[in-house]
Image 1 (tube, helix red, strand yellow):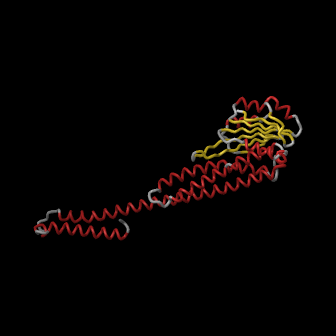
Image 2 (cartoon, rainbow, N blue to C red):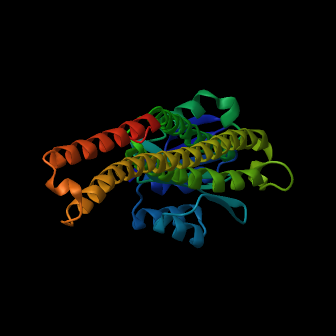
Image 3 (tube, rainbow, N blue to C red):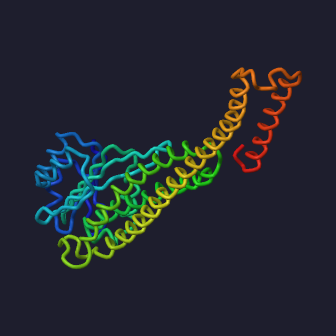
Length: 321
């Protein structure tokens, strides 16, 4: 679905452009066209390929979707893939932004995401002195918007982790905590898969040999790289904390199981003593004098009860009961 198609010249908005009129604007000096699509259909991609001479391999990647974050060069043009990660009702939803960039055009295609980029377009139009740098600045602005949206997701994950950490030493919550930690670990891994490949790709857009279209915007891409580096470092810290929390919870489960085993062993010892004496007196030997003693039965019960009570007291003092 076409969101908008606008032509810019010398950093200023010229007008909205119909698809069939794109060619006439591309012929103008210092002019570029920015097309925004959402969940593009194959026919729309073919029209864009025809209008801008997009490379067929890049178009194929955009059509199939579910690509790894990357930035690829096709002659004088660039093709970028970024994952759009957002938190919806406590769950991560991953969309994709595909961007085709050359000096005279930007084609951005948003897939599987409810977050738009009208704010990015408005920001660019408010800064004509920066937009004058051309399509590369639009590419940076889109990328910067995607990366900035990682920070709220990261904050939500950190808050969720803090809540779980507060419950670690609450008795009876160990297994529930482990389940929550593994769910959180999957979210962190999802964010990691969005950040790390993109950070590697952006690192090629500043310093050393960079694509010609990005020569004048290297410092902007370096700023994006710095943001990605900070996010990646925070993700690594969270992953380490989650791993530690899982180990602590497993230890708490082992300690809980050990306490149960100690209680069972203590009660087994108490009943074992009682069983031993009852078994001895229940063998009905004639030579056992207490068999014919008037107080033999109550004394035996009293003895067994006293011994069990003594053992109970000792185990209670030792913390086993």
